[in-house]
Amino acid sequence: MPRLPFLSSLRYASSAATLRASASVASASTTSGSNSSSAPPPPPPSNEPMRFPCLDAIERRTKSFDSGPEPTYSKNLSGFSLFHSPSPLRLDYGGILPEFDIAYETWGQLSHDRSNAVLLHTGLSASSHARSHSQNPAPGWWEKFIGPGLAIDTDKFFVICTNVIGGCYGSSGPSSIDPADGNRYATRFPIVTVDDMTRAQYDFIQKELGISRLHASVGASMGGMQSLSFGTQFPDAVGRVVSISGCARSYPSSIAMRHAQRQVLMADPNWQRGFYYDTVPPHAGMKLAREIATITYRSGPEWEQRFGRKRADPRQPPALCADFLIETYLDHQGEKFCLEYDPNSLLYVSKAMDLFDLSASFREQAKINRAAPTQVSDSGAGACALPSKPYEEQSDVPAQLEFHEARSELVEGVKSLNDTPVLVLGVESDILFPSWQQQEIVDVLRDAGNKQVEHLELSYDISKFGHDTFLLSVNEVGGPVKKFLEQDI
Image (cartoon, rainbow, N blue to C red; front, side):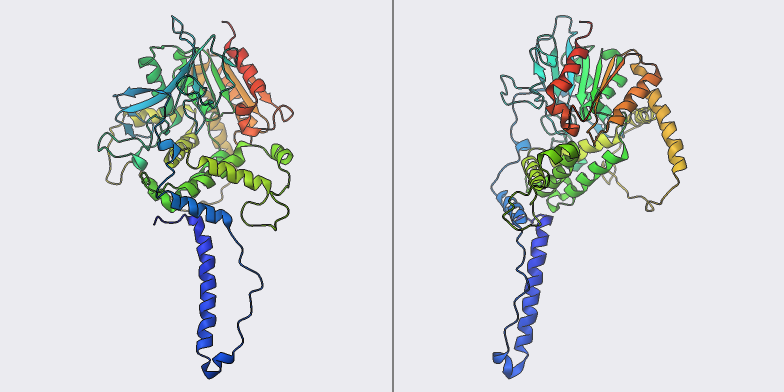
């Protein structure tokens, strides 16, 4: 019998307490001597124990993994092509992938001079399947944005989308096989950065597709990070850059939310420190992680209109399980996602987002790390140590000085884009990547000397969808992207 998820401990703790109380009453009655038969029965409790159907459902699902269902990400995926690099990919934090794969899909036709390619970057958990096609007719994650006459017009452009390094939809990631020993990497997979991901993409488009210069690099959310990363690392290899709901560096608010997601996932006993493949997956922790993430993807105003304070069934008494409509929505989102993405990939890719920083000093240190000899220590690739002392409150003066120094490092880090047109699009209702973070991108680009920066912010009146606006507001996002991509062609 597999171990039950940590959430189920609540149910068993309650049951154990009830049993202990019953045992205590029974013990008292047996020691009361000859008068035990005439002793009055124990009084009933004031209230019946509460039921927890949500925990029962998790328990049932855990038991179901004895015979299935198999996680979606571990099934044979189809419809993508695979680029294999036999050359090692040296990583920003000193790790190495001795070889790597990149899964990719394309739409449209590549022109004779190979000048019309648009590289589309994904968000955290998306695959290369951005739009349906004959090899995979299922709708893609940007289905309404790609196609004839759409935001990225396939009558004009050759569109490429890849699954990122660290992912689980065909590209090399924690669920991939380590060629050194034939076993899955699991948490022996090295820490990767967004820059690592885009260097692998650059290698792929050069060697696999023979494209020396892209017409444009386009991405939203983590894809917006990748788009800027690609442009700043390889300015001669891209003509235009689009960053939607992205940032120039990750800030504490978004780092904190992703940390919480990782912590609840790793606290699931079935995670087994990453070595859960071919056993029960940490679906309970994954479900909770997704629920936390979903809170950051949408906005308060939209949820106020959509759910208000409505309960799922007002005829029933309040419960500690999902009760309000917003709670049932989060529960549904978590349940739907918990088997669709590899938990280890969620850990690694979300950490890459935390580490994102366009600063010149970060790039210089990463370059030094990549050049250093790579050694595998006895403790494995992922040596980790807690801070030697707990956090102590500090004056905000050093923080202000640090902010100004960091700002100048960012300006230095984006100077390579000075001759590249850039479109930066933000959303006022976005709480994960607030619009002031897109404003920072604009400011550092202009301070660095770029005179071809376009900036658009969608107000609450235009979109209340928060961070997910880039997936849902087809005209408001797609229109500006289309106009920007088709300038001067």
